[in-house]
Amino acid sequence: MKIFPAIGAVVLSLLLANATFAETLERVSISSLQQSNAETNRPKAIHWGPNREKYSSWTTHSNRLIPVYTFGIDLGAFDGGNSIYRSEEKLEKLFGFVPTQTVNPQAEYFDQTDVYRLQKQAVESGKKRVILFVCDGMDWQTTWAAAIYKNGNVPYREGRGTGLHFQDYRGAKTDFGYFVTTPHNSGTDVNVNSQMVTSPGGSTPGGYDPTAGGEFPWSVPADANYWIAKGENTVHAYADSASTATSMTAGVKTYNNAINVDYMGREVLPIARQLQADGWKVGVVSSVPICHATPAAAYANNVHRYDYQDITRDLIGRPSIYHPGALSGVDVLLAGGWGDEKKKDGKQGKNFVPGNPYLTAEDQQAIDVTHGGKYVVAQRTPGQTGKKVLEEGVATAIKEEHRLFGFFGVSGGHLPYQTADGKYDPVAGAKSSGPTAAAEYTQEDIRENVTLADMSMAALDVLEAKGQPWWLMIEAGDVDWANHSNNIDDSIGAVLSGDEAFHQVTQWIEKHGGWDDTCLILTADHGHYLVVEDPEALAGQ
Image 1 (spheres, rainbow, N blue to C red):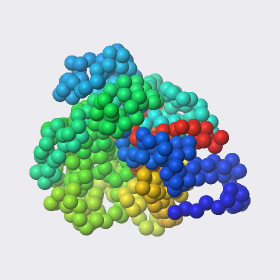
Image 2: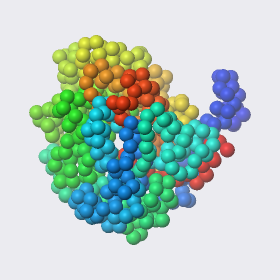
Image 3: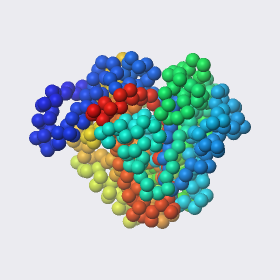
Image 4: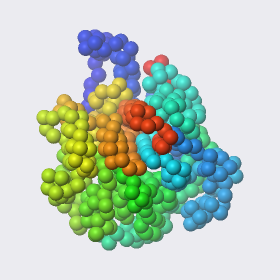
């Protein structure tokens, strides 16, 4: 656990390192706030979960409404008077039943599956470059906390907000709205070995009750337990990243843990594969493992999100349990997962191969161009700078017209966590039982890895060099991991690192033909349960 010396000593040491006094005070404020709250489980300024008396009373997802920011397209076909939630008939078509307390004739919000339809609409309108930018777990409150910290004040208390690049960017037509993330159901059981759903419909159905959860992402819920499926009068399932990603990539409501299958376990085609069949190139970038739920749903099929090695096989065009004949595979795959080892994993079924839980050694060798495969492999290499390794991979892939596979990370499968100050020195997270161990990184962990922005630029360059229309998913997955840890320092850092990747993406677009042929949708897949009681405290006031 990190021990903080007196403020005076911190100031002196950082001044000697050429840091400014203002930077010093900001860092002490956020990290010490996190450490104090985690150690005592007594909330100061913020807390996680429905219990205001504890810093941590909930460490997973919620049923909050989620913001979406569009660039190059608008939301007019789906929000307001066109909302699915105003129509019982449309809701029944979406869910297969009419969820309780969910029809809302005044709904301004729309559904997460409309993100899929937005992408389809963009393609039909003539867009040739489509980017789905997912900040996993980044609800309105998480964004607000990061914007407050970056601004040094509280610039807004509702609405789109300001202070982050994706809030303020006006280089393209832009729109803002919010949607419901609830799944078809939670509690569905499956058999990974047979790839069968064994209990269709699960135990808890989805839905959204605005009288309990609120009409806006910034609403205070009338029932604090409603968002976590423990409501007094209404109980609706809250989503996981697999069902939500499937909704955004394939346009269906499904059960929690599903990867591009419907609630019965039947295959659905994600938009990337639909476009690939029409000659488009496709890419996937993530700051967490290559086959985690969000990147998985960009392309793969599986009845369970934790069948990692088989999901990766779909992504890289190798025979898998769902596709014995193999899919074509994506053109670019850049993410984490490097270096992890596991001897057993019951969640992956009988065909699990001991070793890296995300990618077998055999599959990695088979896809490498040096062994006759289709991918230039750029991976974390001891003693070499990660960015240079990736840049060399990009150059080779473009020159020799190959695909690109990038594999980086630290123990746990993710890229190093950035903290609010832009460094990589996390403090402890929190659970109701007490603080959790803080991540620690060596100099090699930082130097030999890349950032989300590095990977995003690499993917854009390789896809654009193909000379064909392309679709790209970019995921800032560490936002979700930070919020699961109830760690405000990591959460703000993750949002800011995702925001910097977005900033560099917009700069790249402006330098490569502009927005006439391009659309970008930035959103989250679900929310957590951060509550900001004293926003000024996050600004250092």
